Image (cartoon, rainbow, N blue to C red; front, side, top):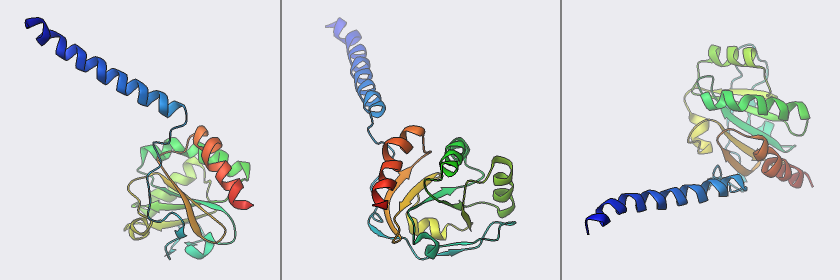
Length: 181
């Protein structure tokens, strides 16, 4: 009996190790932990009109999300994960596959503009959402979040967290190509 007291913690540790290993393998094999259900999937983009960042002449509104498949990326200069995602957004923009529109969320306008100037600007249009009014309408829970919007202005996919190369090649790009058909 006393040995059972020593074996129980080891047994619990082994079970947890197996569970974590199985989950890690599933993520590496294409499981989508960044996909959370959204009530906005297959619904029109919320109606909005945002002012542009300082130094930019092009505001962003829901009307700009009609006519072509596009990405809407929620970001902030304060967001560490957004900084990690930014090089990937730049590569997507340089590929010419899809326009990217940004919503600078809960940010100081001057800080957002300076951040894009310093890191490069992959966005066709950027709107400023300092009070989270539009982010709330989109159901944003944190930054970065990216939405795939079809040519009719319908949200077709919500990606939570930084977009990786695997996310782009396995999920986003195939969906964008399918929506263009």
